[in-house]
Image (cartoon, rainbow, N blue to C red; front, side, top):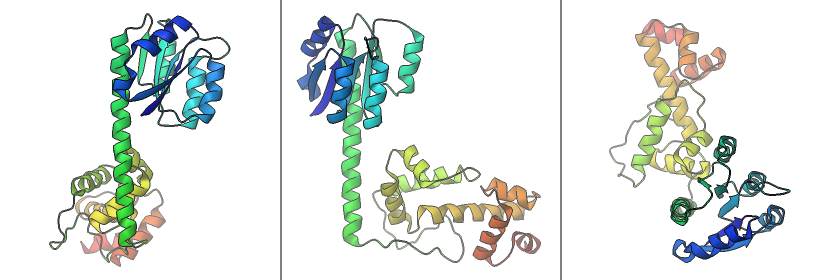
Length: 272
């Protein structure tokens, strides 16, 4: 079950939420409090999945409470309830990635629908974590090597006819497309993992399992292969080519290019 904390300084509103929402149908366990200050102490110790809080309360606002709770649990789902139709509140709620912003008088169906969406999101996250854990355990059992040396020449996307299709091949291809669409930008494993809603550790292992090369090595190969194309087919200056493929340091670009191809960018262009 998911753990939910209800916070509202209006006892009647708090009791209505506690009694009239079918929490069991949502697979949720509820704790109700009429003080944001007391709730702040509670969130320091409890493992919460969902926070449903009024915004305007004495001594501590629901927004302050939500910030404290979110610092402890980044994946916390937050639903704000307010009797004040004030855009500034809604704007702050959105900055906290709130699932919903509901105005009083509360409509039970609206609250139930918002909680249902929060539950779906939590279910998806729980299943994703299970999948990641199972995958990481499989990798550990196989004794996956720490690194895979890159081939002598960059060949991004090259396929081995002997390789069998894997269940994550579609995801791996989406990551490859993501990389090629951003060659001129900063590309990190963490950013890619965030974009696909996975942990960096999982995404890195999965990518290497599917492609036979690490994420970082693939990015380097893709950039240098694109640089070859630009040197051969355009009149861009070498520093412009370097910038187009994500290198801000010309000397570093030239060194990596020569290490991979045995020629400097200028020598490659002259021979092409």
